[in-house]
Length: 328
Image 1 (spheres, rainbow, N blue to C red):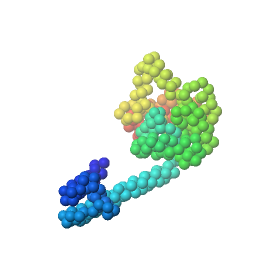
Image 2 (cartoon, helix red, strand yellow; image 1 turned 90 degrees about the vertical axis):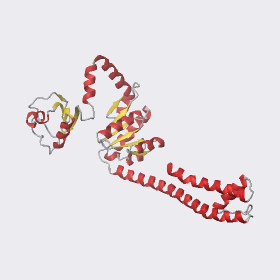
Image 3 (tube, rainbow, N blue to C red; image 1 turned 120 degrees about the vertical axis):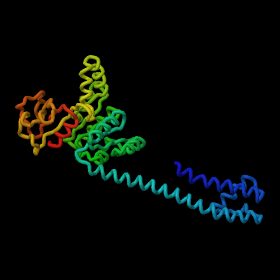
Image 4 (cartoon, rainbow, N blue to C red; image 1 turned 90 degrees about the horizontal axis):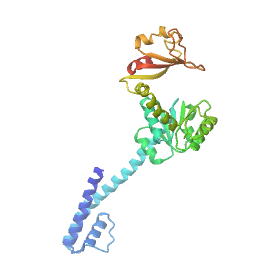
């Protein structure tokens, strides 16, 4: 902005000087003086108005030398800005497309409204890879400014979902404003990837959740229902809710509740909870264990076995949990 203003000021000065010069030296009117200045510095030279006095002709020579050179420089700068801007935008989009094509086990967020923004912020905070599908071009521009990967288009379109890498994605989150759109997105996504985890938003209208699950949604969430339950719990169990909020913080400054998966190569695989030393070494509480195709075990006993693919629900300091994750 400042640079463009600085480039425009010399041009205005040339126009004012040229107009004043022709008014004084050629006895022209302001309009004729400005007209003669413009056709001189742009090299148009219609010939209908020309300087007749020797002083006016000498003035025209200097005006042409200074004005034409600057106008050519100004036009070249404008052209360069347009070309560079378009090229940068093109290269930026190609680079983004390449990054999206390289994604694996990522999440696809359909819709960047109020809920979608919060979801993306949390995914970003927790270093989860994701790509956003949004049909509003202006909103896509906002997503680009936040350095999120984005695709402009309809999230229910097969080609758009394939471009977002749905075949290699870990999950899809459908949070557009319409129940019908979320239903169509869920149906299309399930058809493209039968193993995909699909989280779909529901308005809470009776029957919508059932239809979304029938269409293929793994989980259906109604923000209105959750909001109402949370408000009621804050009244009935305020201290419990404060504790949950505290443990769910992404910051490492206090307690944090997190889930981690035990890999096949983990040193904890095949040991009991006591043998793992998780509580003694890291001062972390194992709140629950979720085993594949089994019910979740809360407050597991010390002799509870730890197996590959078990998911541990942990409560402890964020820094300690980060240390533990490195061994898993």
